Image (cartoon, rainbow, N blue to C red; front, side, top):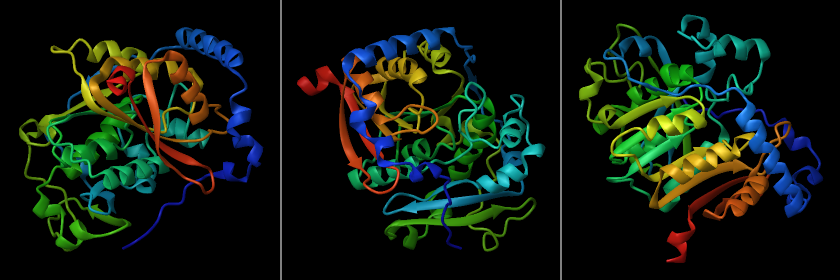
Length: 353
């Protein structure tokens, strides 16, 4: 059954002046002072400790009675993920040591700064970045990929299904990793002949479908596609064995992951809808700086401006320019509604060579 998403973008009713790039960038001196203040705020705010998450050896309980969706974009492999509405309705049944599920419901908000950073929602810029990957024909074969601020993990899952050597998924909230990202990866850990039909492989455009996983039922005609339930030791699954999962603040995530030997360097870093607050720019920039391979690429999808939060592409571009570490190039700029963009960052030395 085909369907589409309804995104709450009330900010589209704002006046054009609200998204005027010239107005947002009010001069280098003002921005320098702004970012000096950002650094102070960031260092003074509470820091959420990072940790690595090991997937459960038996994944079946994570997928019992699950309802999922499938997105197919052009020639990309189908990507499966848990249905957001059903996830919300079953929140009380899920383990949530952070209490973000109840907090999100009580506040009726997709963003509670320092508590919940929006990872339970698949934001529209994620689809923009998926479409850009389809356009570029990136295969990811043999590459190391980081999905930074992964949420549902669709970008990392794409890399995984297209031959990435390893994929690291990171999100601020441990509940997001344990209850959404890991189950979504499990849903996609199936052989191609179980999850893809010839029509899906050759389909054009963007398509969404619904499916379900019913407890005790293996009938693939009732719910398509069902997850592979035979694997009881995920560490031995060829796809899951390439995955690593982390939660926590970028300021604690970075030193934790750098403790690995050898220290990881990523050929591709995905990050979508993560520059909504200027307070996070220093930590994000440092993570990109330390974790990107010398010839690697950072793909960033974002809106021009995030109303009520303060961040956006124009401010981030200015911040990147001031740090003088990366070049930033536009790959795609949406012209309608609340403007969205896909950009790429690469080290300056790489481009100079």
